[in-house]
Image 1 (cartoon, rainbow, N blue to C red):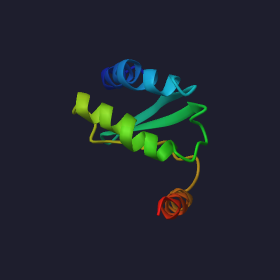
Image 2: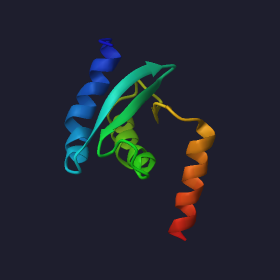
Image 3: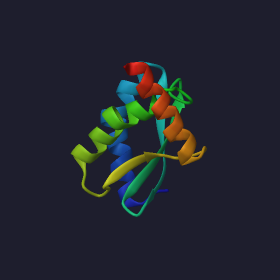
Image 4: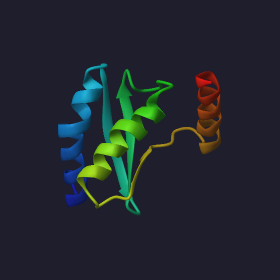
Length: 97
């Protein structure tokens, strides 16, 4: 995927996001951009990490949306169902209380 939009998102990931993830031996991959949504996959130690959704919200999404208006949202590329993600989030939120 070498669209101009993808190049812009990749530049943001390279300069703003990847350095933070690499501190924890993680990384990120831009999978697709559809309907003004960037879909990403967490890799390295971030892959399968229970906190990946929080990293997406507090680091990835925040940086991408702050640095461009070509996308309106950033989501994890779903390799599991939305229902399973919602269930995992509810479990994690219970543990915070």
